Image 1 (cartoon, rainbow, N blue to C red):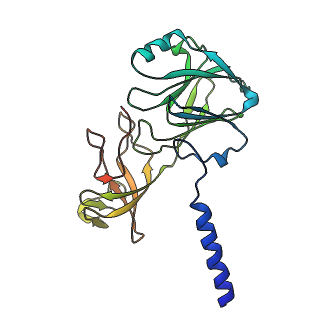
Image 2 (tube, one colour):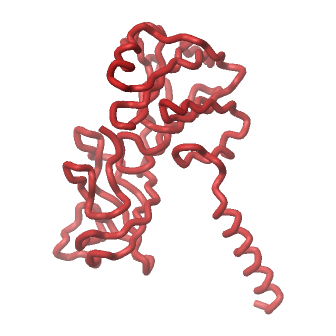
Image 3 (spheres, one colour):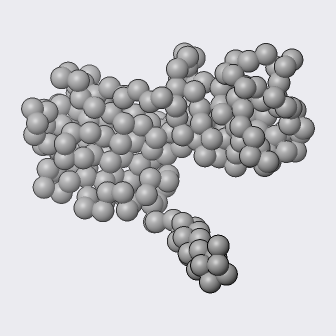
Length: 253
């Protein structure tokens, strides 16, 4: 490659890296606002969530169902700020969000604002994106080990989570104890690809999306070393929510 062309390429890479290093303002969580630039934004500071929604498919309401008084008595912030009418055969719904008892926010959609039993969607998270086509994107670390990005779709009766091949994690961490990496998920650690010493930096790339336990957690993670080697690691959580990797910890109650 000619020196001038190489210089241009280096400058371009530096410019791209600089641009990537400037995250879009997102409030809590990491869902980039630029992904949905045409949606209205509603921040519920007390509940700890940010809502993005199509303004022409929703209306703001001043309503507080009687049952939400129980939340207030427990020290939990809760509100019902929006009424959705998305069309596509979907029922009109009331958005209900709360801060959770342990700073673990959750939002729901109720067909009857006064009846929690009418819930057709519920998910923990800090970022909720309601699209005009009826899809719901959820992200943010709440009742999870990391910023769990999910997609929900209506199945004719209620919203269900769409299955993913793997779950993106993207956490930079440091091992607190030796950690074996294997070439296959659930592989024999006695024939590990390598074992990282305590105090070793790593990147947790992905989480297995099948075989969750009763709490919805999965200890199998795809990990990248500083040298660029990739392998599976089993990283279960402890009763206090910590793991043997600093940076990977359960957030919720």
